Length: 342
Ligand code: TYM
Image (cartoon, rainbow, N blue to C red):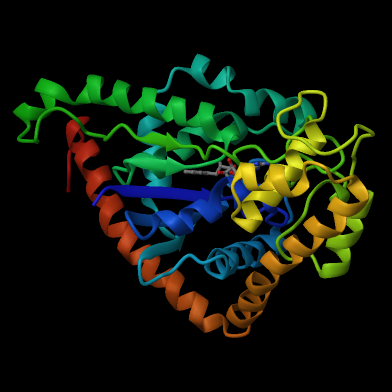
């Protein structure tokens, strides 16, 4: 079976962008592929954060994976920091990463500009190397992510090729290895719709956990009233009717796309149903669809959180399974890089 890995940071609350861009697709993929889904807590410390909240946010995120339909009889779910090989591989990969590759990462540029020099730790720069480790450790074939992770995936691929070139090939063969690849070169899986869910208050910026206004996003755990209020106040326009793909109507395209995805309709069906509507008719429709879609997730989330030893056991099993794969990769690389092994 081909293998898939992906993860979400336990920062802030999980929103519709994380769900439609990533988690919802994991649920479909787990039936066809071997899947490992992690909560990337080590990534969550790259900007200033609340230590008291990290472990709760980590558990919440894991519970939401399950509530959204990740099935642990098929997928392994674990916490990144529970598998030590992530950090270990990161160091080895760092030595093969040109610093220029990191300097040109868009997310680094944006986040470091916003955070201000005082708050920009080295980890914010080297973050993509940790992400590459997360993926390469498991010899992953595919990585389902939203559009904003595309550049990080590209770096992961380049890094895999570079390490294969530097330490794989003939040198590696002489050491008794399989020869050729140390790492499989993974491919991103970016969904055709939902890869870039936009803010409710500005159709030109993406929905994000770090946007200051909570009005800009729908969180998976938002109550019915909160959802209704956010939709009521979201940005719209004064064009007649509703349409996809009009560059002058980014908010309209975004809301129709969200509606399409949560109702599992085709684009054509949405056009036929909503093309002639005005905002006054569409807003209650999308509100109800969101509430209907999120309600069962919220019920399952509450159930899972009411029995925390259930979750602890799942995370422990997941970490054991993941470590057994990850350790092989790291040990191979140590050997290929010429380290004296114990
Ligand atoms: P993070 O935690 O920012 O986001 C988690 C996932 O949600 C997707 N996403 C979106 N998709 C559509 N529209 C949006 N507005 C939106 N916002 C976020 C992201 O693309 C992502 O798939 N570096 C990663 C986490 C990570 C990772 C990995 C992912 C660390 N190691 C290894 C895959 C494989 C991140 O910060 O995602």
